[in-house]
Length: 366
Image (spheres, one colour):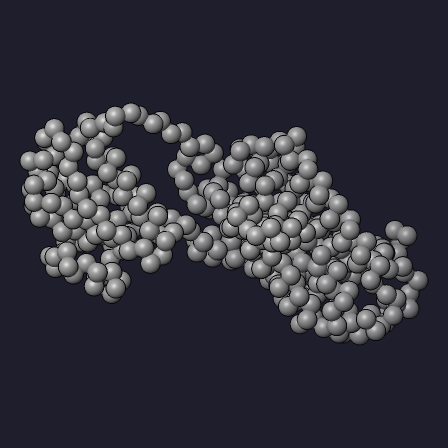
């Protein structure tokens, strides 16, 4: 059996080496996608335009404005149009928030009674408005702390695993899952469709090779290449985006290997049914990108989805890979915490390969 598989593996490696497009898909596309998505997908909001109406115009009020200006979240803009013009300011999208400081701010701030400033927030985007409100509260807490003002009670909050609240720590491991799934499935989805399109499938079919041997011979080269791809993506995530790796690197590599095998088997399954490379490519992209982004927990929490969609997520491989890579990189999880998702990935890989071998018929018409 091995004597018949090895020539197929060798043939596939030769084809990959001579196909410039495949080399670009393997080595260039993942890095470009990681860099592009890594910067584009960011939940933090910075440089929020904050219109300031300072009726007090005293050193105390200017200290408050400087507290907002010194924050990386706000860009304070002096506005002399009055409160009545703030709505027009929001409608023209010239500001997302407005700070109104009352005339008696300076004398009141040193008095025994609490003093109020008004903050108006454009809530056209409710999520953005919520973030702006949190940023405003954070700036005011720092301002009060610098003045020595303390709340009636003190709540000490400790943030674990991502103390700086960098969204890259959450999204970049998710991008690893997305890109590995998309690239790996794309590679194998083209392999058999290409043989059909170029007419070389006849030569394979007339040889005494079994369907399972063809499947194995087609998948093995891409396991090595996709795994090398995974290492390349992890290096960019670690050294470019500075995502920490607190767990065992060997466990991450093992999870990547399992996940790559599942993705390759899924691409092979598409390839056995697609008549042309174009159809195979469209099937791979549609079958991997949207489900991974929308239904894996990559961006949206699965618990917040309708029950029907929650059941659908059980057949999405990234659902099981994301807790593994995020858990190992950020929390230092071990295999004792992650044996269940890893086991499901193994099972999914076996099922996809078995279905591919069964659907691969030793005849030209598909």
